[in-house]
Image 1 (cartoon, rainbow, N blue to C red):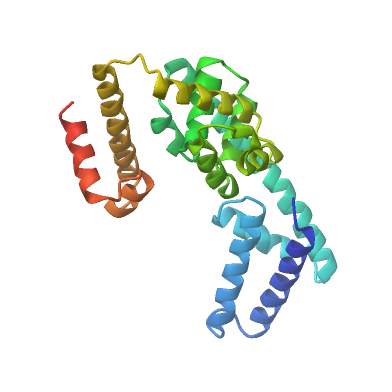
Image 2: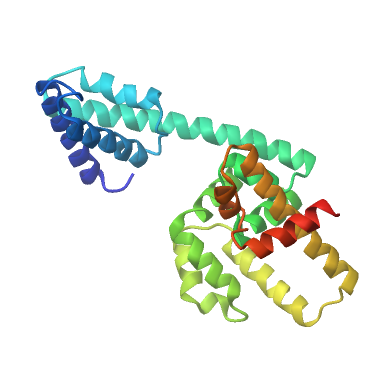
Length: 260
């Protein structure tokens, strides 16, 4: 984990806030300090990649109550949160692994699967899933690692910019950035992009095939919207997460989905 000094300072600050809040009589006597405590708990769990649930918040509370020594408190909390983080990530990856293997067996589409396993839908993750996993059957642990790395915010813009290039992919800053981030399939992706570029100029697909591909893409976008709606998202949030914020585009996609 990066920035270990920063998280130690955050834990120290949390101990201070918690102590002061207790001495002042709790949340009912100092609501502002209580909000500081809640915000700090959120930051701590986020650092360790843990969800903001009562289970892990109580873990912080219980660890804090074990000793009155500040340094001991920080050491205990750091060790315990690191351990829980490893356990959580292992459990999460095992769950993703099961779903990926099931998806491989049933040839599930990424548009259906990715929201369930919290993976971002972008050109690279679709390539990894469709080409490297479904088609070439690379190991699940490699696929999980690659999908998670490619979903990181710092990678998204570079993936997008790289995919827009029409030549000299390997000479670009985007390519350098992604290779430095350790993306395992970036060279395969570049070769795939080159093949795609050649097909644009030397396409043997007839018009009916192209139309069918377009219809399928539109239908998948609307299915993604429906998935988020079933998860309880509002219309606006579901549209945003499925890339259908433009009302005219949404109506077109909805029409295509309901009439094909």
